[in-house]
Image (cartoon, rainbow, N blue to C red; front, side, top):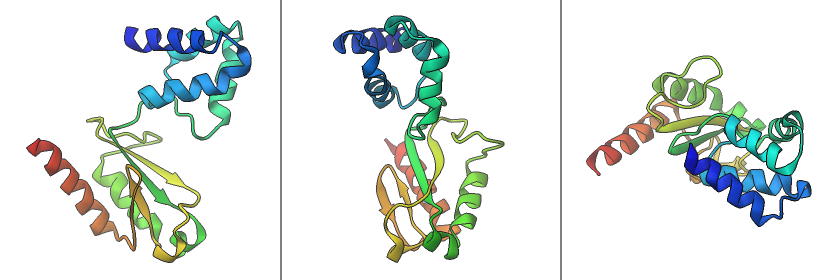
Length: 159
C-alpha cells in the first residue's frame, strides 16, 4: 500500500497539487494500479485540499474509474443490440459461473480475471463479441469463452 500512496504523492506533486487536475490524477493512479483504493482517494483529497466526498463523487461518476481491484486479465462482454440479439448474455453467465463470481463482485478470487460488460465494442458485424485484455474475440459462444479462460490459465501455469 505504501507504494501506491507514494505514487499518489508523486502524481499530485507532478500536477502542482492543482484541484483542476483531479480527473487526470485519478486516471494516472488507476492506470498504474488498475483501480482507485480508498486510501488513495483519501490522500488525493487531502493533498488537493478537497473534500473526500468530492473526490469520491468524481471517482464514482465516471464509469471508467473502478473502486475495486481488477484482475490481471480484463474480460469485456458486449451488451449492445447486435450482441444482445445474438446471445451475449449466456456468454456472460457462463464466464460469471466459471470464475466463481457472486453478487456484484467482478473479479475472480484468485485475482486473475475481471469480468465486465460494455454497451458497445464497435464490432457489431462480428457479434457476439468479447475482448480479453483488448484482444477481440468474435462470434463467441459460452463454450468458446470458457475455453479461452482455460487456455489463459494453462498458459500462465506453464510460465
